[in-house]
Image 1: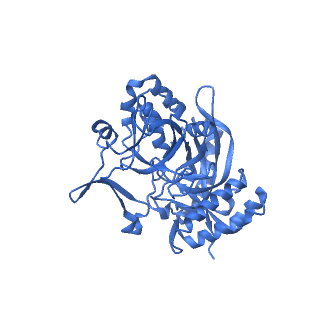
Image 2: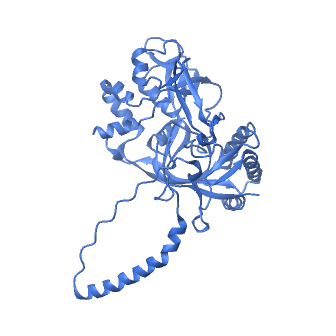
Length: 428
């Protein structure tokens, strides 16, 4: 659903270890020379620091995670409430019960079966019944799990953390005055192919398009769908505001507030397969918004002040999401409800679904100048229960905030740096 762009190179730790003694020798020689030179003359100015190397793009799930060495292990101390963690675990176990026991999940170099993962999570859920302190819980996690981190070579473990939530928008189940923005259900001519059924190499890779004869072609983009009304008759509701609906698409689900006060939940039912492109990036490139101040709130404000640009800006994102009516709470890509402040979305091509993880980042807040700042630390256990078109690569994770004004505010502002660790059941 989603929040969420970007997935390699193989690591060579043995080369590093074998060159360290030579590096020390060179360092000592250089130090000696410097002592002589500085005794006789004024040292030249220091050169500017080198530009940080870009992250290596990872496309193979076997390279997406790597074990964390003992001296770099995170604390695994959880700052959330046990009730929400227990709920997220139970929902995860519901999904695992529908998988074949031998289904293998890729955790970097490790393979873990559904049965092994379910067993580990069941033992953890049972331990939560003892109401452990954060310290006891952390100690138990270190006993039962190995810790792997997202491999962001050569930058280390840093990831970009964004947020998503459940928006509530005004809509009608039939077209009427003031409600003329179509909310589309999935088209009849939309074809989706899961390439993992052909080879394990394509785990998590799906292709979407339009079948023309015996060829699968790209499905029309947002502009063509809007201008041609080719999906006329596939409307499941009519929204009052185009921008409101656009942000429901980005979140992947939402609530329609009907004129009579009733609520109807809608959720992800497919997409046109086009690449997700962030409209905030467009507004930055055009000089209309400052990079440091881009957020959902600032984008909405700009579009409200420039209604004549709405179609052009929204059409920049060629991806279109289709919806279906839902009963019950919002669900993620696993088909089970996502839990506020416990569920995350990652790149399904790289990271195992249903995995237990540990996220370390910051709670976002808005500064007086409109930029995003930290309101304090956030460190907790999360479940990998969702994905999204904007969430690509090992360096991206989307954190689910829930529903309501605070959730909308936090999710709209969130663009924090952080670290994401996956907890892998220890091998028998």
